[in-house]
Length: 72
Image 1 (cartoon, helix red, strand yellow):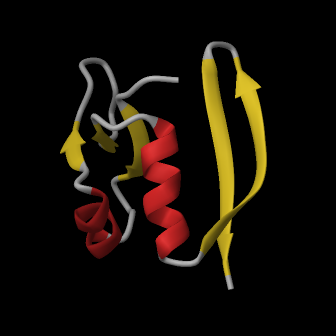
Image 2: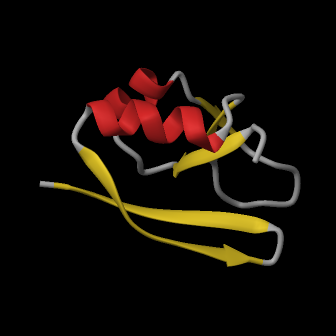
């Protein structure tokens, strides 16, 4: 997969979003904001692994890939 990668919603931890280099945006027609980065998912997952996050599961929804992560 290539970027951009959606990494959070408007309620996400701002410190984590800053660590990932994420920018907040509101897409036309949506009534919510989301955080995204230009990096590919592989790069984002590598950054999160450095903070102790591990992939628990992954699935595809249409043309979207979704990862579920957990940190002890």
